[in-house]
Length: 250
Image: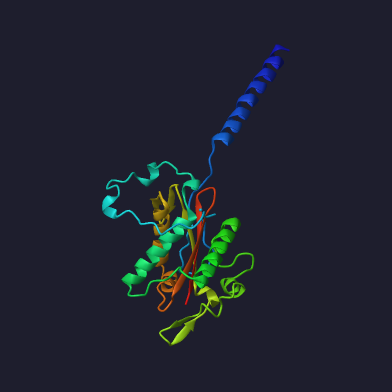
């Protein structure tokens, strides 16, 4: 009788301890941000990258390399930065700046964000970034709506076709005037076997643009001759995952 009572009491104690351990583990565990969301694009050579913006801001100026920390803290030792500290509109402005820097280096004309048409292109890009964030994936096609569909639905299909050197026209078909991608803001992630950490809006934009420029398909779009306008949309979700869309226009 004593043995049965003792065993029953021991079982109760073990269950209570085990159950408490599970509860505490669930409470202290944070979101798992292991890396950028996998891209599901139709372009084999676009980055497999892979987090709602506020009012548009003026184009920020990145901190020159000479003024940055010469001995940065290793990525693996960085403390996470809340997603709310990142500004989608500022990231978009940096992306425009970095794309135009790359175009200048390649002898291309600067892309404009001014005017009614550019504004429409920007809003279209932002809506697609929002859609990708809601779906949790990077893709030109979300809910059956393609890049060409978006240009058509916004009255931009004919307007935005780019006449390259007077020889041929690049139309919105086949995602030819759109680049999509993603990264992580404020948390350590691994890319190409290396730990990365984007600590501010400029770093997020730099990671995205560098990724695009390192792949032939995306680079050829961003550096397309005779393009005149650019629209960028960026959405950072509450876990710091960044979704970005760049749309081009004549």
